[in-house]
Length: 278
Image (tube, rainbow, N blue to C red):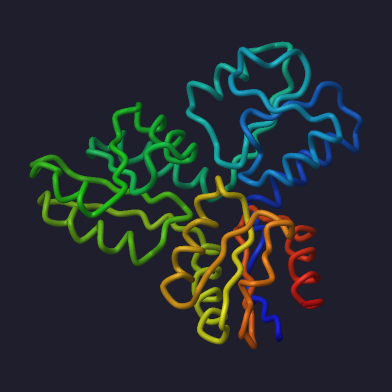
């Protein structure tokens, strides 16, 4: 069985940057390193840091004196300011620069009196953080159906997009939003790694009999890759090599592998290595 790997997969710049920041603090032997929420949506990477003594805290008030690193998905300005106000904390902001750009656009739109809409997921930490930059008054739109229910507004409408959304899904939602106002301004904040990962995964899926998508089950971008690949070939979303079942590949001559932007290379290599042995 031949194993094909997507040209673009695994860590994006934002995730690599956040992971590097944590590693730098570990190497510096900083005392009491803490991360506000999981640094990225990948259990294996989180486990590596936990083994090195890094703790994950859910709120600023949970943090003990020491180092507090802001996760790659970012937080609201209220949460960031609360952390900075703690004099017993060394705060390091590891928010992805492209998420920062999205946050800035949301603030700009709000300041310019736009009704701010975020195309993204209601419960995703990135979208929640961005909402805070529009004074928590922005509305998160997850689907065309939700956009369809928006009332017509004479107010200017401004849109930003969660960085890991599927472009095709965003286009459908934008078409619906277009019908809801007389003035619409859109910042296309889908990140370049997402734009690269998706067509790369599609290419491999078309050349394969079975697709394996590697990444956290709590990772939105990995879930979207799996959904995308599943429209083309039988697809299995796994977190680690332990989940692979040989019967998935019965009769398959080619298996394709891709991975989410929060999936570390050591996890991908384990999966590819196992598949090559089958």
